[in-house]
Structure formats: C-alpha cells, structure tokens
Image 1 (cartoon, rainbow, N blue to C red):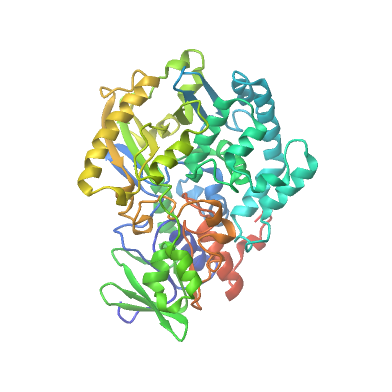
Image 2: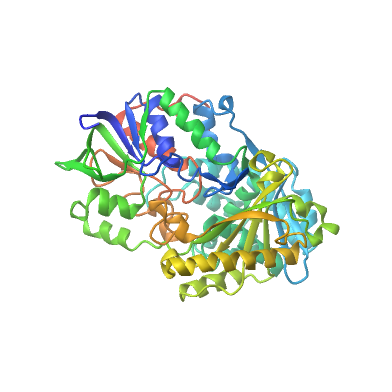
Length: 545
C-alpha cells in the first residue's frame, strides 16, 4: 500500500462514493480506489438487522424511482437483482382530533389523480380540484424539469435553474393561480394560496417535512416544496431486500470492472503540492498517490478543515463552511419488528389507509411543524410527537421473517449535542414508549404485545457516520433555501470543484440535498468528465439529462 498509485482516489464509500467511483472506472477508464473509514461500503444505502430476520433501513428509509435512474441506464442493476417496488397508496394522513383521514395514490394506481381527489374531497371539493390540476401539471411539465434539475450540477446563484425557469413559464400560463412571488414565499404561504382547508394544509406541511426538514414558514422555499410533494407522491417505494441491497450490487460491479476498495482505512489528509491534490494520507500514516484526481464525499466541514486545511482556503469560504446550519434535520428513525401490520381505526371508512406507504399521524394544525422547530431552536424537545410511519413489508415481504412485518417511525428531535450519552439512552426508552402509546391511539393493535423488538436510532446514533456529525443531521447540512442549489454547501463548492486543483467534492451536503439518491455522485462525475474529457454516457443516449 505504501507505494500504491491510482489514477483516481475516492474518499468515502457511501452512496456518492460508490456512484462516482463506478463512473470513473467504467466510463472514465481510470484506475480507481475507494478508501472508507467504516467496516463496509454503502453509507446511506444502509440496512441492519433490527432483530434477527427483520431489516431496518438505517438511513434511506424512503426511496424514490428517480434515485437510481442514471444507474439503471448505465449499469446492469436489474440483471443483478435490483428492483424498485412502488406503493399503490403513496401517502396517507390520519388526524388526531377525530381520526379523519385521506389517501394520495401513486400514478400507477391512480394515473388521472381522480382517486386522490375523491379522498381529498372529504375535506374540500375545491382542494380536490386543485390536486387534480397539480397532478396534470406534474405529468405535463414538472416531471421532466425535476429530473433535469436533479441530474445536472446547479447553475450559479442568480441564474435560474430548470425548475425556476419552469415556474416563471407556469406563471404566464396560469396567472390566476400562481405568480413569480411564489419563488420568495414560504411553503405555508403557498399552500394557503392554493388550498383552503387547514387540515389538508397541515398534512402537506408534515409530509414535505420528511423530505426537507425545514420549518414551513421559512421564506423562499415554497415553490421547491410544492414540487417536492408532487415528486413524493409520484414514486414513493422501497428497494427489494432493503436499501443495502444496492450497495452490494454497486460494490460488486465496481470490483468486477477493476476498481479496488479498502475499508477501515480512514483518510486523514489530502496531500497538496503546489496547490494541487497529489494523493491522500491515511490515519495510520500510509500515503497513496493519485495521478489525476481525488474526490471527497465527506461533509463540507471535514473536507475544508481536515482534508484540505484552513490555511489553503479563502477567508470567506472558510467562514461560510464553519457556519453552515445543521441542527434542523435531526430525527429518530426507529425500526420495529412486529407480528402484524397496524390496523387503523379509520380503515372502517377508509380501508386503503392500512396500505399507505408513508402515513402521517398528526393534528389539523398547519403550524405544528413550525412549533416543533421553535421548541428545538430554544433547546427543548417538542412536547408533541409528529410521527410519520411506514411498513416496507406491505410491498416487500423479504424485509421481515415469514408472516411478520418490519415498520419504521420518524420524529424530529433535538441535535445529538443537546444531551449526554446517558440522557440519550433514557430518551430512547421513553420515546419508544411514547411512540407506541401514540401509535395505538390510531391503530389499537399497535401495542407492545404486537412488538417483537425495535432498533432505536437517534441523532446521536447518526454521528457514528462522521458525515452526520456533530449534530446528527441526516442531510449532512440543513436544506434551508440559502443552503440549496447553487449555494449548497457554498457557492465556491457547489460545482463540485474545490480551491485545490484536482480535488473534487460531492455528497449529501451538495445539490440536491439529503437522501439515498445517485444525484450527488452522478453530477460530480459530469463535472470531472467535462474537465478531463472522459466518457459521457449521457451524450450517447436519448435521455433528458
């Protein structure tokens, strides 16, 4: 290892690392090595046994069709057993006050949106009609723009991205419904422009919160949140066998193509000579050379202050990275092994609610998540649970023992640094009890008698992956408007380049944000391929990105 030399070195073997490394080998023709600090590759494509025979997806607990689009085109995923399974009922909501509910169906189950509209009509006929209009808008205009925006590096600040361009076009087509001011308005303001029923608005706020993790009243994020809810409905599902199945497939493809990876091999520093990256130094002192490039998939702070060193950074970039927000998207993701799926009280009148892929259990209060953020901003745990729950085994029985089921639950809580290890231990126990108590209010069979075991993951557990430290932010950095697109993580880094020649950077701290998508690694390779004149599979095929 001491004399090893590669064309390309990738620091970190998670979602982004596996993606960019596979492109560098197959389409770039570069001798590539991955160095990963943890015992196994995969990162956000991670699954664990919550109890023997039951799978808990520990990071990408919710996946979407578009997450793997370029990978499925450019690599033999399906031949290796990869399969995306779509929920027929994409989203569901039950309100605590009276156990009323509605369902939003997937396009496969409801191509026209009529079934979803009929469910919403129980609350407002006008809102049902608005949903039908949005569904048509998504299929005719928004879907392609979303994909183009996701799978291309973002334009610099001040230059509109494909979605912003589309929005301005839509404003001209439907000025009576939307206007350019939506680009600077908050999510809550936009929902109230489009919808009339407060319960429907409250549900939309909570569903989008699972994706963005930001308070609905933050200015400037509204238009993007509208696109987010339509995307969430369009392709919510699971990967057969759990999210870690994709990590195994991509790892095998990488090795078979000639790539090499080294686990338990943490990189301490990028070797910089005359302003250029020449290789890496591991924590054990081993130095590995890179002929052409190094790619970091670490969080922005680790990249700038550990791998590069503050002495190599412009003052403003160092300041921006040092003060990035990363306290908002701190959550509990509990895995539950159960005897039977929850059977909800409201299923007597709304039977499809039992089949909802992602189910929100909340109040009819559009400010519920605003209050959650206010409590946490003050350093206090929100006194009310705001649960989102799911059960992948309703569409993928391979994730549990035969005849049994694996569930998940999510709640937004304080950052990891807010409590001691002992306090977090006690919190896990109490939060599990509170979650079962709350869940059973909606589904009487969700008692401890139904629970076989559970895996309590909190922000402090997320810090076991260095990228999520020190707060345990699952998106690495918050997804507020000022930290998105061409500003994510900072304008100087958003194009995947760094101040060091030959050193590139990617990961969930870059466009498009958190999640187990191939977006980050794919866009990083696009930048590298254009600069080094490497293979460009997107030019050889008829596709929108």
